[in-house]
Length: 243
Length: 345
Image (cartoon, rainbow over all chains, first blue to last red):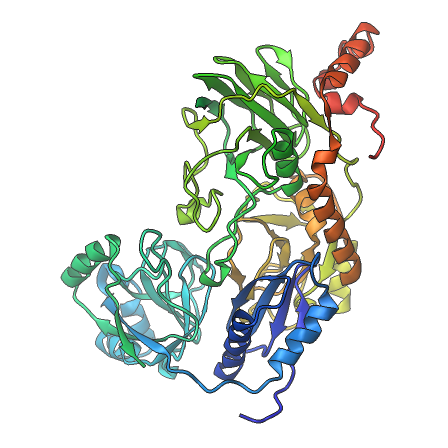
C-alpha cells in the first residue's frame, strides 16, 4: 500500500454524526480502510465519539456535539485515516451450512434459467465463493458479503418481496448476503441457513464481524431441520476455521 | 408494589426510552422515544432519569387503572384531554392514581405522541441498556410489541410526593431545520432548492420507522442506487420515486438511497409531532448553528428539574377562569398549559 493515501471525504450526517467516505463504489481496498479506521478508533477512542458503524465504503461516526465539534473531530479523523494501514491480521473464517433450493431457495431455478445453467451449477458457484463480511446493517445480523462470483452478478427483483424468511441466503447485484431475521427484500433467494448471525440468548449475541471471511457448504433439508433446532437452542452451528 | 393496568389503548403505543445504543454496527435498530423532550419532561415530573422507560401513546386515546396500591404518573407530549375519576388533569403535570382509579386520555389534539411516565420508571429486562420496543426485531420489555388492553406494569407504590407541573419553553414554530448532506451532491441545485423551498406534508402511511413526505418529486443526478451506508435519526433519503422519507427511530441502521439532508437533533421531535396532512417547510442551517442548537437542546433536557413548579397554582388558575365564566365552554380548559402565561425561566 502506498505511503500516502488519498484523504476520505467528511460528510456531515446532521449535527451529531459524520460520514467518513473512502469511496463511492463497492471496493475491497476502501472497505479495508474503513475497517482500519474503525479499529484505530476502538483502540484509541476520541473523547465524544459514542458509536461507529462501518459500511462498504464509509465509516459513520456518531458523536456528542456537546463534547467535540465537527471541525475538531474532522481533523482528528483525517489524521487517523491518513496513517498507513496496519498489516492485515488473520481473519477468522466461518463455514456456513445452507439448504439450497426448494422451499428454502425459491429463486434458485429462475436464477439458473436466467444465467443459462443448472441449479446445481449455481449452488457450486455460490458455495465455492470466498467472501468477506463487508458490513452488517439494515436489520440485526444482516451480513453483506463482498466476493460474489462475477458470473452470479444479476439485478435485484423488479418488485421487492415484503417478506423473506429468517436465515435467507441471497444475492443482489454484485453482493451476497446472510439475513438473520425475516425482512422485506428484493434480492434473489438461493437458500436458507440454520445459522443465526444474531441470537439474543446466546453468547456471543452477534456471530459475524466486518472483516470476517465466509464460505458456504450445501446441506440437505433434513440436516437443515436438525441444525435449525440446535441453533434455536443457542448453538452456533457454523464452523469456525482460521482463514 | 402496585400495578398499572392498560385498560384500553390504541395502535402505535409502546414502551420507549432513550433507545438502544452501541450495537448499530451489528444492524441493531436504535428505537426509543419519537419525542425525546416530551419523554424527558414526563420522567422529570415523577423524579425519573430523563430517558427512563415510559409509555409512548399514539394518536388515539387510552385508559390506565391503578391496582394493589396508588401509582404516581405524569403526562407530556401531544396535548389531549385527560382526567382521573372525572377530574381534569393538565398535560405536563404529575398526578397520583389511588388504588382502583382510572386515568382516561383522549385523542391527541395536534401532534401524535404523548408520554406517560411512572414514578420509579417501567421495569423490565434491558437489552443493550434499553427496554425500547422494536417489534420487528422482537425486542422490548416487559412486552416486545405494541401495548394491548390487559397488559400491566409492576410499578413502585406512589411516594406521596407533592404533585408538580413543568414549565416547558414555548414550542418553536417555523420550518424544520436540516443540515444538507451527507449525499446532497447526488442532487443538482434546482432539486436541492425544490426540496428546501417546497411545502411538504407527512403521509398517513408514516410510522416509527419513517415519515413519508408528500410534495414535489425530487430528482437524482445519478440515479437512486448508491452503495448502502449508515443512517441517523432524521436522515432524509430520496428513493427512486422522488418522494423523500425522513428516517425515524425504528430506521434500519443502513440504507441505499441518497440522503439529501438530515434533520437537526433539536427538531427531530418536532418533526415526529407534526400531524399527517399538516403543511410545513424545511430550512437549511450550517453545521455550527445545528451544533449550537443541539447543545441548547441537551442543556434544556439537563435543566428540566429547574422548571418544575408546584401544581396547585394551575388548578387555582383553572378555577379562577371557570369562576369568571370565561372558560366554561372551552374544551381546552382541560389543558391547563394553554391557560398559563408563563415567563421563560
